[in-house]
Image 1 (cartoon, helix red, strand yellow):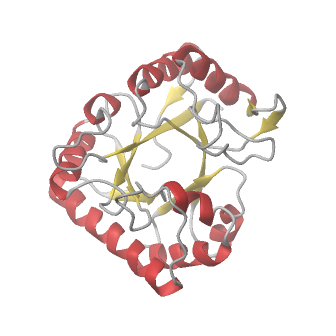
Image 2 (image 1 turned 180 degrees about the horizontal axis):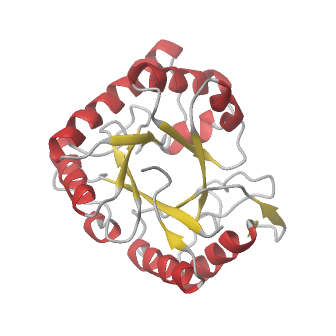
Amino acid sequence: MKSIDLNSDLGESFGPWKMGEDSEMLSIVTSANVACGFHAGDPAGILRTLEAAKKNNVRVGAHIGYRDLVGFGRRNMDPTDSELTGDAIYQIGALMGLAKAAGTKVVYVKPHGALYNTIAYDMRQAKAVINAIKAVEPSLVLMALAGSAIIPFAREAGLVVVAEAFADRAYNSDGTLVSRREKGAVLSNPAIVAERMVKFVETGKITAIDGKEITLDAQSICLHGDSPSAVLMAKAVKAGLEKAGVSLKPFVD
């Protein structure tokens, strides 16, 4: 890989409660997964994040999730097909309106948290999300976990799909993410994370939590924006990749 996209979850502050350093992250990443108000975010804060994304020429994606503000969208849920499709349409549409007001546009969709992990392999819920995207705007790109079952499923349904790898999350040897409940699931050392991502971009391989080497096919790297060392890690990853001769650019124009 000679180029790679860097994405981050942003717009997740709520009223006086601040999460992440959106302004700093937007000076580093090339794509922003912006909360849509269901798992996090409020309209005024989301709008500010979108305006900052526009200023930094960062692409915008709808970071849709379960209707779960209290659990930050990380609790497993089992909505009906119509509920999940409606919720996804609602969130994408809301972000599209705010993005237009900010002078930018939504070009992709990345599910969040428990929804992201569920639809990676649950094709019933995956279909509900896919149907929502197609109903709103079929040209929207779906961002999904590298190696997951939803990728070929969504492509067969007519969507363009981009796969992502996670810089600051540990992997199981089957390519799934280690549960956040497990020790070592979230990485926080900027130097280690940067070295890991340079290796991934150069070789396509990541070392799993059990020491095995796994191969991932991904066009974007996720840098979570809500960890204490998020900005330091993002800067380290960017610097490491650029030193290795890798250009950073969004996966969609």
